[in-house]
Image (cartoon, rainbow, N blue to C red; front, side, top):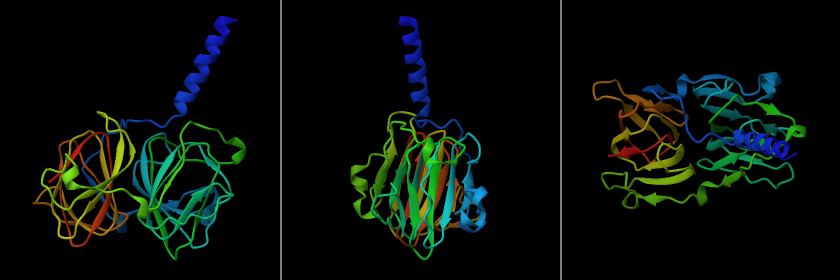
Length: 277
């Protein structure tokens, strides 16, 4: 009996652990750019066809068991039926107004620049109320599936909804990894800053910024949330203009040269440190 109990406990513990969102990313990033006008679009939930939000690939494949980043567009008035997902996802609003919560919750319309986290297994709805609505979604495993609420479960993670007005921004003087003090700011979103652990931050660059971001980890991916960035991997490369919804990845020790003409916010997901100069 004692052995049976120990075995049952071990199985339960393994199942619970496997349900937790991975804290590292085994897929090394590479130097690549996807401008907003080059995003490949399809349906987020192909079974619903044009009743589904549209989904645009930035990196990875959300239909496979791998990390992925993608854009989602919602029509005004969209409201999903209650459902769950098999994996945890995190989102940042790029355009419009979005709501993501329990079906009985009052609408909390999140404007551009807001952040939310939807745990695997938790029942919820998603709705949109802007004339044009778009968000960036980040998953650390896949595939990204929609399932009925009858399959709901608790994976130990909790939902988060942060309006952009409630973001806590740190100035460059408070940030060790900004080498040259300037008006650069950052807001921490999720993850751990322990060595080699996945984390995500919002990086706010002032208008007129002209500098670089050097990746110091095996994995670095960036999505423009607002503003506009002129980007090059080398001063000899052609310039890429990155508007909201654009993406660039960087190899370890690669440097991205960037400049702005207006205040710009970038979502950065990395498996370690990066340096802003």
